[in-house]
Length: 354
Image 1 (cartoon, rainbow, N blue to C red):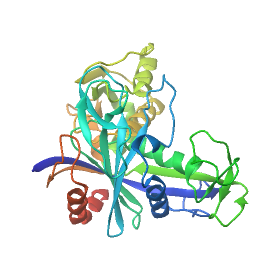
Image 2 (cartoon, helix red, strand yellow; image 1 turned 135 degrees about the horizontal axis):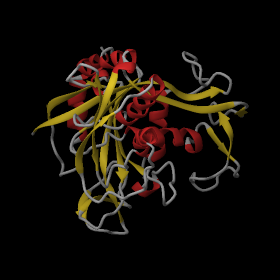
Image 3 (cartoon, rainbow, N blue to C red; image 1 turned 90 degrees about the vertical axis):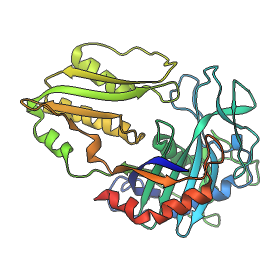
């Protein structure tokens, strides 16, 4: 079935374990661990587990970030297709869910109402290309591409779980690694001792292209209006950071509200901003764009004397494609089919950077 797919390309500049005094320095290699090794370690750790056992982090009840679970990993030559399951807030409506006891690699979705034995949510797909240090998000059918959850999932694995590198304050041979155990330090492999002043680091960034973004920054003094197009829904947290920046400029405050339905909104705000305020808006919105490939979501700036806004989204490496997908059900696609299609398009995907 020919389906429209949104693909965004990201670059991975840090993945592994680094010395404390150089972990934030560009171009510095890790002491041990890299993107491919991390993906293989997650695969090894998750193998044979039940879905509910694969979360790498916990969340407080009032958090807008929800848990993420591991569905499967599917190698393709030197690349990997990864599928994660993103938990959503239960709304009482029938939603897609997976069984808590489904096994990694053999997951079945159903549309159900609230069921304590199932996890409501939606899948997200990531095509990881370690040789190039790139990750492509592959989105169809949902508003979020899941990149925020992916980064949280992988970083917490590096930080508190990875059996090869994480050493806990527990006796050897204790039960399987549990979230929340105290980390004593990090080692190169299971045969080595803890290395002092080594910490995990994961840095994944959206790829910017030359275009409207540079023009916006150079002409911040001429901005006369801000145009925001966004989608709010029950399964994608409201981006309060962005709206609070706007509210601060207008002298207001954002209150917490739960969204119970989905809708596209467009807001045009006549606003003169300083260079620092323009940069703040851009930074907050760019962080938001990392987690969506929607053609609707965008932030525009209308300059004095111009009728057409300059859009931030046009400055990022993303594009819509039409590919032949084999659907297993309404939520999941055949991983073998998807990875083959992405491998076929590999050069074109990497070309989004230019």
